[in-house]
Amino acid sequence: MEKLMLSADGDVGLYEVDKQILDHFDDLIEQFYQWKKTNCYDEQLFVKFLRQKYGTKAIRLIENLGLVPYDSASKDYEKIKWYNF
Image: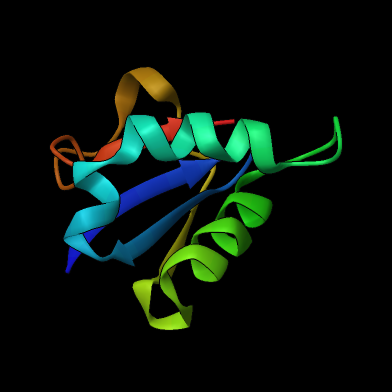
C-alpha cells in the first residue's frame, strides 16, 4: 500500500491506496472527470469512484491533516503525491 493526499481547497486527507492507483493516477483522474455526472465534486467523489473501480479496500482514509498550505507541507509528507480538486 502507498500513500496519497487528496483535498478540495480545504482539509487534506491522507489516504492509503493500492500501488496500482498511484501507478495509473493520471489516467484515473481523466477517467474520473469523464465519469462524474456533476459540476460539484471533491475528493470524496473521487474516493467513491476508486472504490467502485478497485473495491472498498483499495483506498482508505488514514488521517485528516486539516488545512495544510500548499507551499509549506510538512517534511513528513513532502514525498507523498498530493492532488487538489
